[in-house]
Amino acid sequence: MSNGRERRFVTEYTRDYYGGALMLLVGLAAAFQGSRYGIGSMTHMKAGFYPVVLGVILAILGVIIAGSATRVPSGDTEDEAQPSEWRGWICIVSSILAFLLLGKFGGLLPASFAIVFISALGDRDNSVRAALIVATAISAVSVVLFWWALQLQFPLFSWG
Image (cartoon, rainbow, N blue to C red):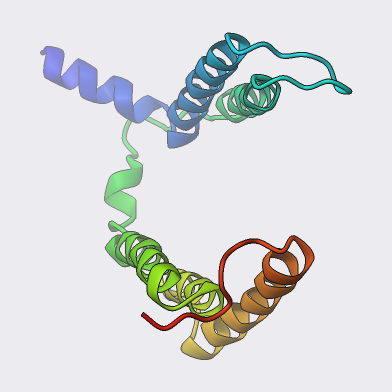
């Protein structure tokens, strides 16, 4: 009896409600923890200013997302309607691992290309050509922004 009631409760709300509530909690926790370091002002920021601002923004977005969540009729479940997206999960995790590996042994350009290309392949609607175009464009932007403009201490290419 309690199992059916618990299952019904879970299927009455969309994932937006739970995702928004989680964002709200994480945002409030970040703002609270950041306030322990001192906030300061806009002209004299202290160590906690940035975490507090990001935490508050995250909490506000969580409230908006949770507030816009709609109820799902009792007979419908989202899990049965859509198959699991294992391809997306595998590609995203693989792209992060490739970025770490290539960032250490290959440099900024190969690492940024790999993370975008492999992640783009996680979307079933993307073709290999589209993933190549996006990865090339984002790699060019990352080189201009991080390596040239910000002069990040991350070599463009490195071997070994």
